[in-house]
Image (cartoon, rainbow, N blue to C red; front, side):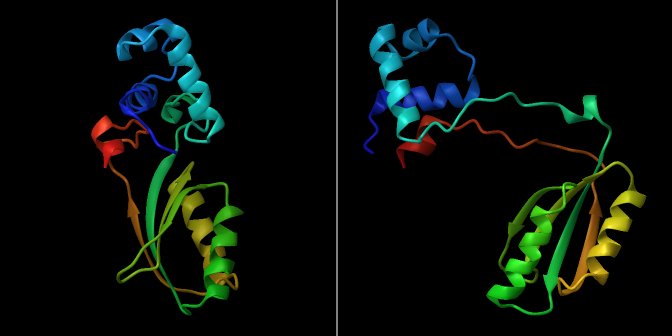
Length: 158
């Protein structure tokens, strides 16, 4: 799908403010409301815009302790990776997991109600047949920056 400067600007604005009104969005990109909103619908239909949502401050709702864990598996084959990734998907306390290159295989973020809860979870993982060789735990003491879905037009133009 070819995106022009209007499409790119729409995406930049909506990534920062998904609740912007049709008229304010149109004004921000210097188009009238109908053509602007047709572009938004086209971007939605093409799957470029997957949906809209709210960023929740979960700390206000439930106090959780974030813990990052580096994990290295014993075996490095498709079956081992699939088994580990299935366990990750089946563990609700895991909020993020990425496979990485380098000295470890995965970085996993747990959000547990207590450190004891996290420790029980990792102990269960270690005695399971998932094949963890070693792990290193990092307890988060302060969140410096939270992930954001906002993008800039410069990111989109490249």
